[in-house]
Length: 311
Image (tube, rainbow, N blue to C red; front, side, top):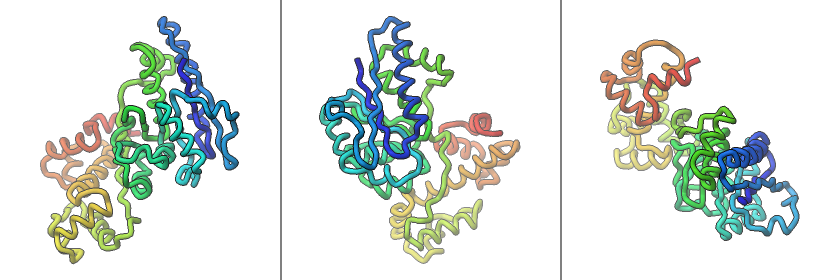
């Protein structure tokens, strides 16, 4: 028997809450068909403004798995109450597998359990998450980040990937692929980098670096060198490098590469022109070098990206 607590908190995504519950129930049936002796017991644990809405006996038990599902945009997951984070810490102390998806990572990070560890969340939360939890190493290229007793998933629909990950922990090979066939869902490994958009953060508070970011956008595709950009904003190169990385989380060269590749993504989605033309349009005379950079950043070739995302 595998006891699973699915937390229902204010503004949590109900499709994920009930979808996970039904996913574990279906996994029991699939495991039975394959002759495997495993039974998941998913239980909804409700927490609202008044606190937990559950018996003390239920709350005091040690669940084998605790899942923090995605949440719709609200203040709750950004500042979860101590009563909730303390309970999650207690579950971790009893050797539970603690999992989060999308905005649920904010609640998990608030417990301190992720300090010094790798984690992921929705790519759109990058700036906010780094600001609130700088002690967590964020890896937004991944949909699943497995840190042993802590598993985080990125993206609003990543609860599906998280469900498969948890089920695979407690079943023998064969259950997850067959479950995916029943659900008509691809169980192959995905990366969040496929879906991630580069959205420059202009709200970090360093106006000089904001000016540099604006100059990059204005001069694109004829991007300046780092030395030229530092000179344009009247900073020494070393000071500029330090302030730019602190404000944006990226070195200027990496920032400009991501800026160019995002423009290439837009053109791949919006047009049918060859990638060689797109490479020149985003500032690369060598299409091969641009293609290699595209694959490194996006995790897909330009052709795969266009096939996946072009309308």
